[in-house]
Image 1 (cartoon, rainbow, N blue to C red):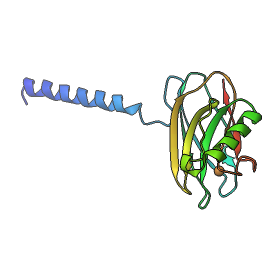
Image 2: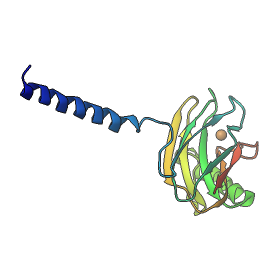
Image 3: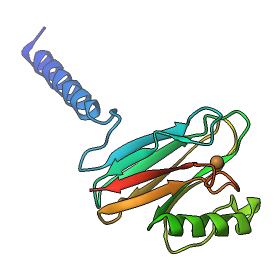
Image 4: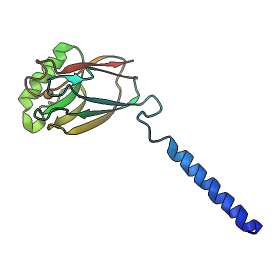
Length: 156
Ligand code: CU
């Protein structure tokens, strides 16, 4: 092999190594820069989220992926700013909005939401985490919130 061919091969080898390095960082479950991938499901057929507590860093990019673990029940995921009374208000408005709206109303306290999912379906939403504080997530399918289908979302 002459010198020219040899140096060409080195260039190719170096380029491949760089490409592999560049791809190596992107496949993880959590993004960099304060961002987070949060996964949530239901406790099987129970009207409960699992886990019932999520957290994020203020201003960080958050992706919530919700898998409806029930075979029969429809569920959504709605993140609300405020206390139980605010979540109750969103729940009432959701019931009034009806199934065509996925039981998700227009409400200034809604920070993010994932559409009404059929049993076994998965949906997601991406948003910038709001200001530090305590938030509530709930399912606004009629009757589910009052049965306990809710959780806490803590932003630090
Ligand atoms: Cu539900």
